[in-house]
Structures are given as structure tokens and as C-alpha cells.
Length: 220
Ligand code: MG
Ligand code: ZN
Image 1 (cartoon, protein in one colour):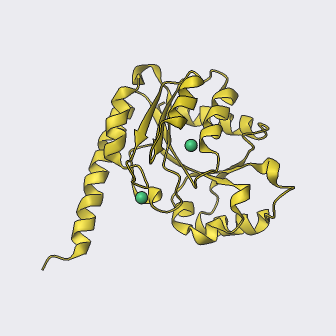
Image 2 (cartoon, rainbow, N blue to C red):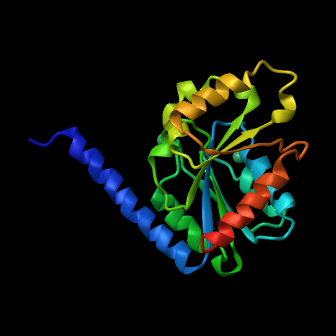
């Protein structure tokens, strides 16, 4: 008897094989890569642009933007002078390894140290699909509320770095940082965390400095 469970496993393992191929391609080119995940409106694109500013030429970036539709975000990255490619998922709510495999060769990898992949804005399934990047980063933002670790545990568990964005809004919206951090700590003890504002630039230097070290120490 065939059940549904083996079918799901086959899809995931095909994705994982493709993800491993993406990783090989990146490693051969000496490119480090980050999968940036967040809910819609958490500020992924503006964080990427602020990161470019804070890096101040220390790393050569490339950007892959994932969205259901439009090329608005890739156009913003290109306008900032970055090699950028847009993936339109055509309605899919996450990026998968095959999409990244199509996008990577369109970037000038030989001229890039770090590829920032902006996943589709969604706090549920992007964490379940490996795409071959080296590091998973979650961008949380103050206006989303302090209960998100409790409501979306899979996403908070699956990342190596947490960026808390829009901290400039802390005086204006109810957000209990202790409650938020307790939730994170249960799911992902000791996760590397940065508190930033991509509007004011607060905290961006710490994040950019950490990123430079990480890329240099990991074969970027
Ligand atoms: Mg965006
Ligand atoms: Zn999805």
C-alpha cells in the first residue's frame, strides 16, 4: 500500500538533493549565502539595503528576491547598485531549491562574496525547505507583536540568527521584549540575536561586523 507519507518524503529529498547541488555551486565559487525569512512587512528588503550601507564595501553582495509576483524588491536592490535577480514563485508561498538553482547562474558569482536570498514573506513553510544556503536568518519586527515565537515555533527553531527589526518603534507599540525573548529562548536557546532599526541604522554596525567575520571564517 502506498501512503501519502512516502510521497511527501520523496518531494523533500528531491529538494534536499537540489539544495546540496546549490551549496556545491556556491562553495566552488567561494560565495557565502544567507536565507532571509520573515513575515510580510518585517523589513527584509530595507534590511538588505541598510546592510549594504553598513558593510561599506567590505563584502561584495548579490541579491535574490523571492516574491509571489512583481519585481519591485529586485528593482530596489538593482537601484542600489547590486546584482539582483527576482524569483516569482507564481503563487507558491516559499522558495525551494529548484528556484534557487535557476536564479544562481544569473548572478556574477565570481564577483560576489555573499548572496542574500530574500525568501517569500511567510512565517510557516520557508523553514521547511532547504535551498542550499549556508545560514538561516529570521527577521522579526516590533509591530508584529511579541507573541510570534509562541505562534510560529517552527520558524524560530530553524534559524541560526535572529534579527529584531524596527526597534525604533518600541516606544509606540506594545511589545514586551522579555516575553518575546523568553519564547525565543525556549525554542532556540542562545540563538545569535541582533536588535536593529533599518530606519535609523541603530544596531546595523554590530550585524554587519558579525557578517563580515562569518563570511571570512566560512570560506566566503
Ligand atoms: Mg521584500
Ligand atoms: Zn510554502
